[in-house]
Length: 103
Image (tube, rainbow, N blue to C red; front, side, top):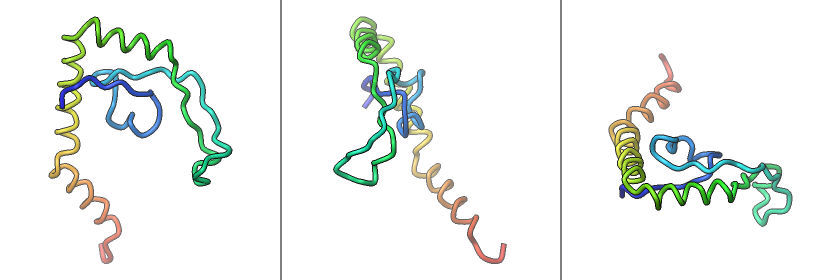
């Protein structure tokens, strides 16, 4: 979509979000989950984002629209290259091949 993305610098999204293609918010603290409605989350951690850093990143997007557009274009390029169906199918095949009998 080539839109600027702001997200917390923690967990799964950092597999595809980085400083060159996104605005990553600093983590203020990690909060242990103890009483979640889904018990599978208990014992894990949530990242508490820094509100101060979020404000800073939002200001950057607003005050520097050309730079924000550049990051957004880079994000699209990165995602199209990394998650192209051919690239993904190669990764899946490589993982399946690890378990092929008679290798």
